[in-house]
Image (cartoon, rainbow, N blue to C red; front, side, top):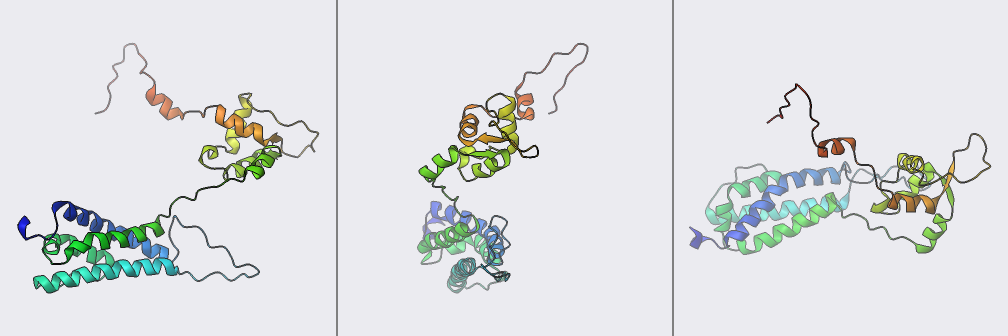
Length: 239
């Protein structure tokens, strides 16, 4: 049968992987179209107005339409060339599942050489919307130097750390307390009002966070520790 296919085995496998990815992707796209995507950011209110933007994302809608149109085109071509009647759902996910079930028929359809590239392009475009690439944080060197010389309380430093990239992601209020208990940092000298939170030199805290290792989770340490010997008790591991 391989001599009757218009694409090789690698292209057939790629098509199968793409088609099986589409049903879930189509659902995520629908969430993005109606702004329900879990990974999306909240829409900010318009300035000087309490009116909320309409719950509709035109970019996601266009990507959804392009994905659906591409699949409709290939389903129609297979049905016309192979003399088949389409008996599947009309949803994007239904079209993808039908093509997956009729993958050999698709591979035996003239023009299928373009299918992997076309379907891959619309899948990748949709994926960029539902799973956007991580934002690269570009730090202003002068602003960072100024921040390092300032004094903030633990909550303020933890908030600042969120803007400084992955290496400071674990710098939380609890982490700052841990650094203090370990003698790595000290509160800046006052005098402060009795009810004011203690403040720290930001640069000192940032440096200590990178130098002082994070505590391993107790469960991880427990799992890596050798089993303790017991007297008179037989220890059996499950499995």
